[in-house]
Structures are given as structure tokens and as C-alpha cells.
Length: 350
Image (tube, rainbow, N blue to C red; front, top):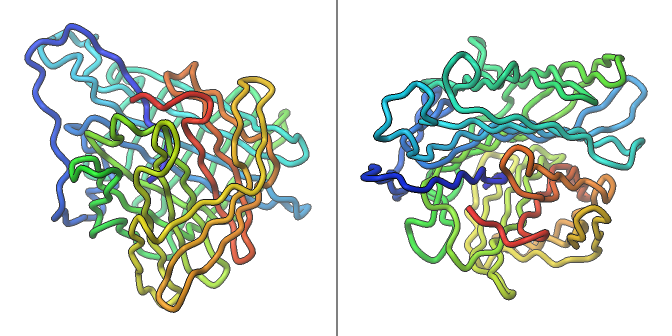
């Protein structure tokens, strides 16, 4: 799953065409599905990972691009009509600071300012980019007031189709779903700049790609999601979608063993149990930043304790039309990854 969806409220649109419905039976195709799917309501390119500097210290990073089709320009021939909108945000988690550094941007497509190409990954927004190179690597450049990232990502494993060959249920109705794949264990190299100083870093990352037209059920409040690169070469994605008023509305995920065998996780196979919380002094939101993830696999239940790199990894993305959420680098006994917590500051509204 991945990510915080961008929300665009549009009023007074007449006779807008319907969005495509996400249905089972998709056959993912590459590199085409690395590119945009503009007919769908929303999609994202979402990279998270861990980097290590020459001094041995670890930092976490996040780079995300969202494309939204608001249907606002369906009947408007003007070049200024927002036929598509691109949102992007980036973050750097450095334990030395004890807080997250964050930057965001947003713009309608066109005029050379923003766009998302079809056929391959090529997303841009006011100088920020995420694209697929001719040699199969991905590359991204982003910069904010406090930091910048210039990174290259080399796949070491094939894409991991989530759900039923890429059809990933997110709720009790079949259409409450996304098309979804991940690329775990990306080898990362590049530079991280802060305070006028650029540093060469290397590490490992996780790419999530999703596109959908009906992602969340009306009675969903938000989700917990994690993507873990395991030390033995395995990969684990797990999520739960929480119900308004309490309880779990839906859950799922996948575990790819080191030998490449993929085990699909049904709602009853995934349990998130909070172990420690952190309250934001800025927003008042209370997040379960340390959790025990229990996954039922053939042979028994396997447990993954999720411990944050540090507690204050909250992102306030309201300036870019997105919500407040927690997106943090986490460790487990057998690997590292990211944990995303949405709907804790307020119910997520898409």
C-alpha cells in the first residue's frame, strides 16, 4: 500500500466521466506500469529507505510523488484547467537532530512545471524529479530549504506484485482496492546535502507503486503500513486499515521468502499490536510508533518488533494539500524499513 493519498476537492463539475474501477485480473507490464495511469483518480511513486554516511551513522529518507485526476478539467478546454495535479514531498530522518526535515510542492500539470509521463517512470514538479533511467535504475532529485537529495536506485530483485498478481483489496467491497506492486531491496547511492555540505551516502530502499479510483471505505479512519527489507533477502509488506470508532476494517500484505516464493497474507494473517506511543506537541496526535507485527505464515506465526529510529517522525503536509501523518524509519530484529501511520491526527478524508 503505501502512502498518504492526495485529496483534491472539486465542486460543480458537470458530466465528468467515471473513473476506471480497479478489478481482479490485472497483468502488470514493465516498464509501462512504472509510468502514469492518468485515467485513475490517484496514484503514487513512493520511495523510503535507510542511508549510511562515511562516519557510519544512519539516516532515513522518503521521496513521494502523487498524481491526482480531479476531473476538474473534463469539460474545460483551457490550458489552465487542472486536468492532472502533481503533489510531492520529501523527508530526511536524522537521529542527530531528533526531528524530521520535510519539504513539499504541488502544481497542476502543464506549462513545463509538472507532469507524469506514461510508458515509464518520469515524474517532475518544479525541478523535483523521479524517473527511470535507460539502464533500469531509478533516479530522484529533490531539494528543500533544509536539505536536498540526489539519489540513484538500482533494483536487485524483480517487482513484487501485491495482492492477487497486483490487485490489492483495501476494504470489504471488491472495488475498494488498488493496483499495487513494490520493488524491495533497492540498492541506493547518492548525495545528501544539508547546511551547505553534501555527503556521499549508500544504503537500501523500498519503492511502492499504487494507482486506484476508490481506495478507502467510508467508515475507514486511516491505516498502519510497513515495508521491511529483511537481512536474509526476504521482504515483508503488511498493512491494516482501521475502522472509525475502533477495530480493523481490512488487513493484508505479502511475504517474499529469500528463495523468491511469495506468500499472500489475508486479513486474519496480520496483527499490529501497539507497544509504545508518542504524542506530538505540534498537533496533539498520539501515534503507536513502536509496534509488534505478527504475521501468520506456513509453519506458524512470525513476529517482527518495529522500533522507530526516533519518535518524532511526524510529517505535516497540509501546505501541499495532504494530511498530517507519521512516516518513520524503523528497525526490526531481522531487518529495517519504514512504518506509516495515517488518520491519527484526524480521520483521513480522501
